[in-house]
Image 1 (tube, rainbow, N blue to C red):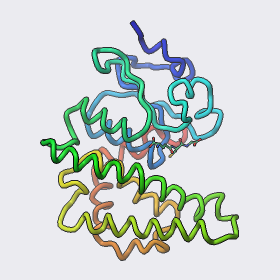
Image 2: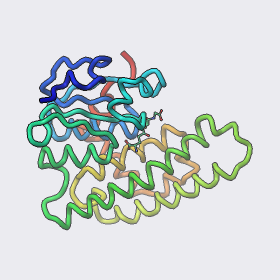
Image 3: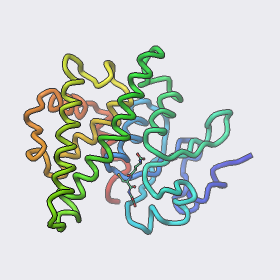
Image 4: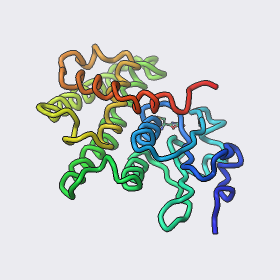
Length: 233
Ligand SMILES: N[C@@H](CCC(=O)N[C@@H](CS)C(=O)NCC(=O)O)C(=O)O
C-alpha cells in the first residue's frame, strides 16, 4: 500500500494536506494549465512552488516524479482504484482532472474527441512553437544574429494564430463549450504579450483571438489559477 510519504518529492515539498491532490508547478503557460483546471473543477488541492531553476526542477526529488524535469506534475493520493497516482505532462494532467471531476471534457464521444483534437493541437503545435518564439524573440535567443530561427517561429506563430482565429469564428470557445482545450490554449495566447511579440505576430488583426483571451481572463478561476502557486514567496 503506497501513501504520499513513499514519493521522494514529498520530502522536499512536504504535504500539509495529504488527502488533497498535490500540485508541483510554477505560473508559466504550461504550469497554469494544471492550476486553472484544479480551480475550475473545484477538486481540493495543495500547490507547491517548483521553480524552473535547476535546483528545483532538476533536483533528485523532483526528477523522481518527472524524469523530464518540467513542471507541472501532480500526485493524486486518491487516484484510480483508490491508489495514489503520479502524473506529468500538462495535457495528460488536464485529461485526468477532467475525467476525475466529470467536467470540461464534453458531453458526448464526438465532443470529447473534438476537445482532445484541440488539446493535441496546443500540445504539439502552439506550445512548442510559441515557446521557441519566446526564446528567440524575448529571451536568450535574441543574442543570435542569424535572423532565420526568429523569423521561422514568428511565421509559424502567425500561421497558428490564423488557424485559431478561423476556428473561433462564431464560437466563444475553441471546441464549442468551455473545456480543457481552452485551459491549454489561452495561456499560450496570453504569453504573446509577455514575450512582447503581439505586434510582430499581428495580434490586433485577430479579433476573435483578442475577444477569446479577454473572455478567458474574465473567469474568476482563471485569475486564481494564473497566480498559483505564487511566483514569489
Ligand atoms: N510538454 C510539457 C512541457 C512543460 C514545460 O515545458 N515546462 C517548462 C515551463 S513552461 C519547464 O518546466 N521548464 C524547465 C526546464 O526545462 O528545465 C508539458 O506540457 O507539461
